[in-house]
Image 1 (spheres, rainbow, N blue to C red):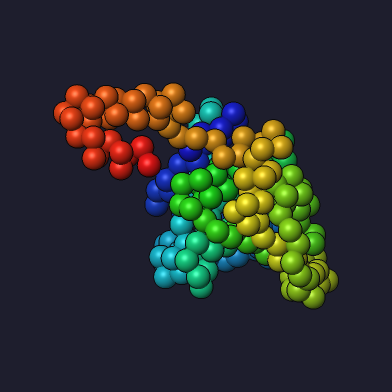
Image 2 (cartoon, one colour):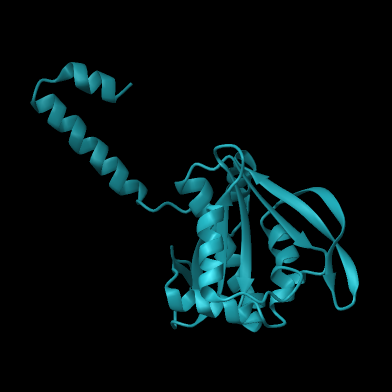
Length: 211
């Protein structure tokens, strides 16, 4: 999964150590509301137990600047997503938005997601900008959910439905619903199969294919 600025790549064991290090920095207060004192193996184990998947956010120069994650909810096609901020300076320059767009593309356009949701703190400027840009609908407020810098902050729960994702893809210049296989390749493949079926006089299969 590759965009104009970043790509999403599989996590190695060393990457989980990076995520653990990032979780102990000030940037972690944006992602989770507090610094997390977990080791790489503990994060990896928690991800396995919770069915969570992680992908690293990597610039085209090879710098690892953060991670995105997703996991299933109670019903098929529903997912929760989150982010881990590494290099917060780059994250705010469009890199974080693109990383989440790539993740949304993967969930809706490859995994056939019906609903994607996230919960984030009202202190989290970076992620609030992403939900504004991506058209998420705010569904509720969780009072005093996070504790940061000596005070409590509310959290918001927001979501994006499948039809909202594709409606946004038609109007926003975010690279949403980007195809993996070019449209011309799909058309060429269909033409090749149709010609093959005609050559074999398999009209019953051709009629089924062209239904």
